[in-house]
Image (tube, rainbow, N blue to C red):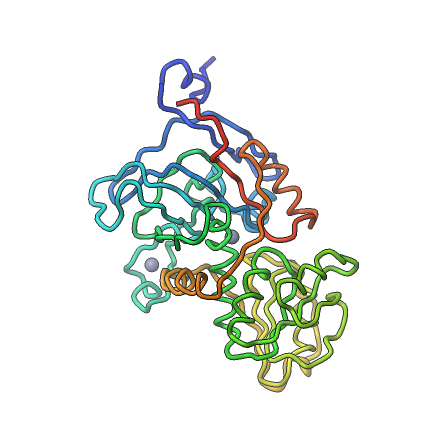
Length: 350
Ligand SMILES: [Zn+2]
Ligand SMILES: [Zn+2]
């Protein structure tokens, strides 16, 4: 019988790290010892300080996103310190603190890339999905997709900016100049978007799971002018709505809440089926659209804007060992704000 490499490592290799590994969909992550990843051409090696936990991680673990590289280290909201540089890296130096987002690699040559829509690159690879991510003590990333992070944000508070913040910002941009903005699902993304929206002098109407009084109060604390159940009609007609919850039935509900010409933006990567609805609810030039991934321009714009708001992220930290608990708390809707794995307290075997 062969010895599994992860076990052999501790005896033969001094340079190892701990990582949470997905072996197959619908199985808990397993804490494993893996060889330190080494940066290839154009990559940086990172000591991970914190990594946000996103609903997309849950969709990967639960098998709702069906094309992960397996085995996989999930996590795509990475805050890390550059420890080593692969050949050809110029714009990043060792010691830099950087953020690594979901968009991990693009081809640069397909039609979408050439049109400035790299979020739609047909060969794109995503961090914590096709590329090992940040639920680990060390990782590597393509230097071109690493962002410098604003200094006013400690590691834990910076992590949720990298997906909840970035995708939230892109969703908000695609909602246009809406003054009355609905947010359906008040989790990590919405709590950031609400702050940015208020800074932009919009009014936020928050919709939470029926009966979730804690989330309702949290939305009001984050600047919503009204917060109620997703089954309720808001007190005013909305100009646009963003849906962060993965529930398809919210699409017709949001369409009924927006004025003619209003847009309903679906901000999640996965959603349950949308029930059929009368054409009259779409009539009046209402628009339903999705938001896919991010561009580096979104990252640069949002990370420049976040300190000016200033965005204050509310985080619940978990040690690396407790990644499964963090995912379960997210699955059960027990979190208000963002879950973040905190790697600073961990003990490294190397
Ligand atoms: Zn491309
Ligand atoms: Zn995400």
